[in-house]
Image (cartoon, rainbow, N blue to C red; front, side):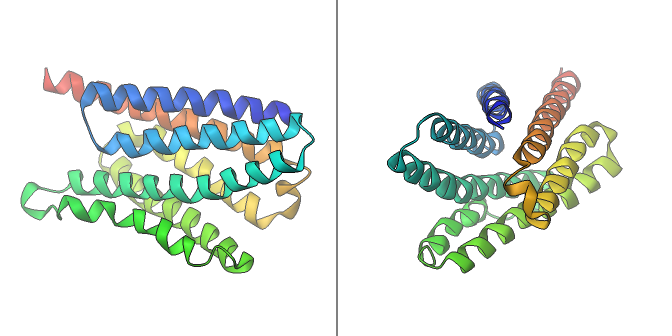
Length: 208
């Protein structure tokens, strides 16, 4: 199981670096949120890795805290980035104000209000994750229907969806078979970043 965590650290770190290069190269705000989310996810998995290595209650508590809040913060940035993608896909006259793309960050505040209630916190995480995946699935399904260059990103989203269903639907996946969802997430992240790179290359070619 520790090998799957190490693999996920490497993959998420690589993806964060690639998203950063896209943000820096293109100067696009939409990749910034995904960069932050991937970086936070890397830190989350690294804290889990340290928890495996060090048998210490303080390390375990710190790891659980990082994973819990890392989920919430990274998901809010992912949703914010998706909102920017949606905004930029519309004609200029139909675009909603940029400030609206920051609304998903309010998720962090809503989570603070229920942080002492385990059941509600769990349901919120399920809703946040499911919401992000559904939005991405609908968005990239439409994009792929219009242009096949988005197919790789859509494939990554579908893998995220499968991982989500298995994680929350099969209790053994959360405990004894964690490597399954970690491999799926790793493949999903790899496929998604490859898709983003391909679409950006095509945009570069078309703008030359």
